[in-house]
Amino acid sequence: MRPTLLLVDDHAGFRSFARALLEAEGYDVVGEAADGAAAIEGAERLAPGIVLLDVILPDLDGFEVCERIAARGAHAPAVVLTSSRDPASYRDRLARSSARGFIAKEDLSGAALAALTE
Image 1 (cartoon, rainbow, N blue to C red):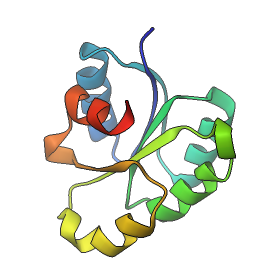
Image 2 (cartoon, rainbow, N blue to C red; image 1 turned 90 degrees about the horizontal axis):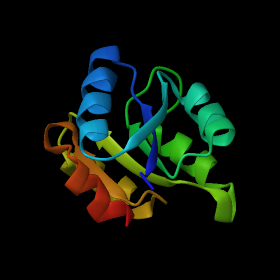
Image 3 (tube, helix red, strand yellow; image 1 turned 135 degrees about the vertical axis):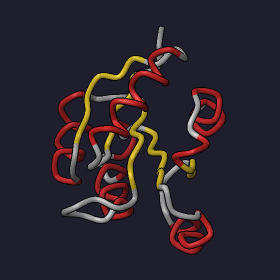
């Protein structure tokens, strides 16, 4: 069974790129969201196994979205944060986050995602 994934990013171009890449590498992208509110709703409605979540969103901070998704408890998907910014700028927040980890957008691959979620 292919892992299910919700893509969350406010840039349609990145969502399109990530969808094509991850579907080619064995993921089933079940939905996309362009902001935090839609991400929270999508995680609830679609019940993906994984949420790839941009840190910078137009309405809610990705860390806040991550915590709201994690509040679902045992039914919460694995959340992996992503950004085009240097991960060092998020180090403290990542350490306190319930996210499984961080992948820089330029380093995104199915293998990198699997290493954090399997």
